[in-house]
Amino acid sequence: MLRINRRNSDSGERVLFETRPRLIVRLKSAIFKFIIVLLLLYFFTTIIRYAALLQGSVSTIVTVPVVTGTTYGVLIIILLLLMWILWNILSWRSENYRLTNQRVMVKSGVIRKNNVYMHYNKIQDIIISQSITERITNSGDIEIFGGHDRTSLILEDIPNPGEVENMINRMIEGDDSEFETNPPEEPQSAQNNLRSKKPQKPEKRQSVMEEYDKKFKL
Image 1: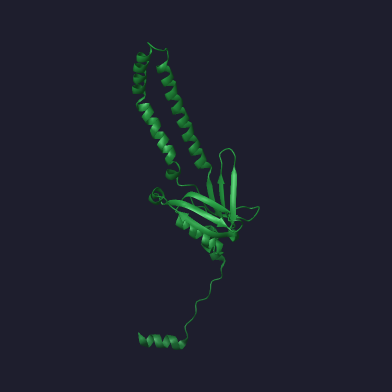
Image 2 (image 1 turned 180 degrees about the vertical axis):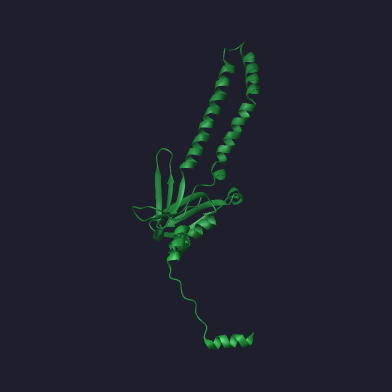
């Protein structure tokens, strides 16, 4: 997600780039949980059948509602996994990486909102790390180190980490010319009115010698 020159009217701060973590990388644990849910639903009747066989074998020793307990247990596990998946999705939605013309910002938190940032003049070093999955999905982690007590800011699973690093380096060097937008174009009708109001220059009349030379050259 790329947004250019979204201006904060209060401070004059412009948003140059805005994105979220790569969805498929950040939600890989949620995908794994969803697969477990599908497997539990698919083998639900088989699990209950084995629970009934187990209850038949232990009913002579103790009276334990194995079938009922197993049914409730599987349903509770499925419900907890679905809630966990929903929490993962909300966490991904709440996480936001933003580059402005003044600083790098990381916003996160579903219930408790966190807003961490670092100004470009405080940045001392940038490190990019990529796992195999992140290389496949063209994402990675960018760790930004500041000069004060080696403070750091981490942009996890950010798409196109190389391009984002180049943007940060350009902003550190003060080169934000590529992010400047062109001035708004005037409406076509206004342009036509301006053209009609412009004084027409008289055509330059050829001298007698030029007409004479042209006549004989032809």
